Length: 233
Image 1 (cartoon, rainbow, N blue to C red):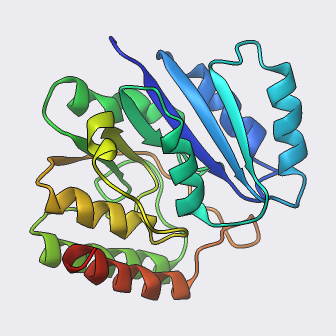
Image 2 (tube, rainbow, N blue to C red):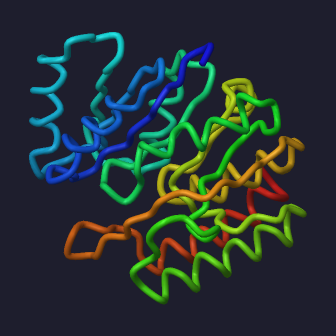
């Protein structure tokens, strides 16, 4: 693969998984840089990242930044994107729900010139499934509304695996600080006419006891964000 991939990893209170995620990302056989943004963690994640930063064999490949307080996933992603130097930018959650072994599958449509943005869909036949029925129904409803508003044909707007050509994000100002990042970026990418391609991915849903954070309130905020960023911002 010619060019470089930037992996942006927002982290908030993921002390039980963040080190393993970084190990899995490091194994991906691609030229890449990894940008981790700790979003004000207070569970020991920050200390783990400080240790990993000090022990990094290649400081240019692993770069870690810290927010002084919790500002939300969108804010952490924005910090990471601002520091990215790769030709493609991929968002990777710091839990173990998404598998870095899917990177080649996600990048293929970009490398072949078939897409500007690739979404890894949890609903196109990949391994695993969502754990909670209400999450499944909420995701499908939000995706349906997205398709109506943007004239897309997506199966999974809320996916945490999104990959962009750098030029796409260079032209978009991200405003959302929290989970509304997903509908905002989708609405803005669609408004600009960029080609969105979906590919199946593996997905291993975790429970709230294991650290899942998104709630029904975030679903309502996502719905408002879809209308706001489709028409007004």
